[in-house]
Image (cartoon, rainbow, N blue to C red):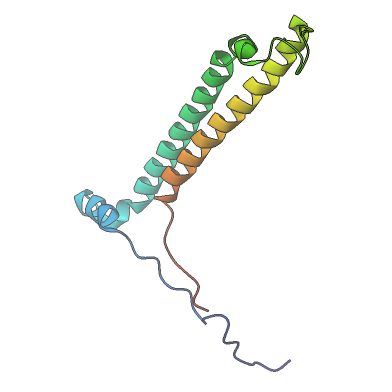
Length: 128
């Protein structure tokens, strides 16, 4: 194989640039850059704590959003008739509505967590 240079990728990766907040925190540390491992460990713990908070919020959502709260949103009569829909069937429809509401709010919570977590990841791009 010939050792040809491929223009698609750079030979070395761009070094991630530390933002001012991280640099400021490192300057405040007594050991400076030597306590970087401690800083990373604190950030890992902070991320784990935040993830546990999101998990607790999701569990609270599942307890709070129940099918009984959505029964009022289901139709009482079949469409175009005067025949009443049985309560058990309305309850099944309400369960579907509740499950969808939980799924949507859970997705919002996890997206907020992912956005918050991205601030701790390095910003670098591979040049093309």
